[in-house]
Length: 129
Image (cartoon, rainbow, N blue to C red; front, side, top):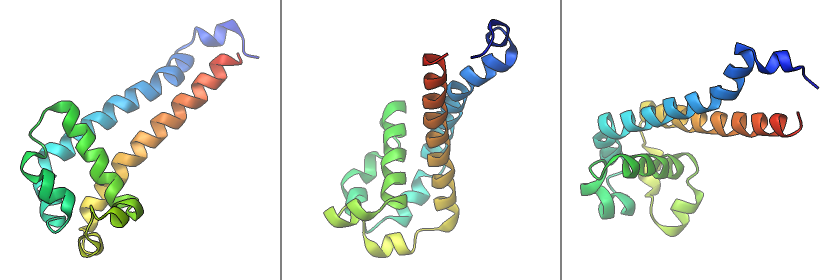
């Protein structure tokens, strides 16, 4: 058990508020990817069915849609099994996907996962405090 003094400290505030801040940073990074790198991503995945269907509107439908589109594309590139199986992703596009864009997508997914795991740990600690 922790003392009441700890929960009134700045360290406790940082531990609890950290995942929220990281979530905002991750959303801002996703928006950055959507607005600055979407054309390069669309060019890299030009033979994929997903890009053929949604290509003209990708990155142009608003904030929430931009976040969802980047999450979908990151999932398609980093965990491609389902997308390859249902035909949304072309295997040659996946093989030739630029490493610099893949690294940016890995950073984006890593920030999302860290914030979710951190939030889960904080909630468990607060529940059993």
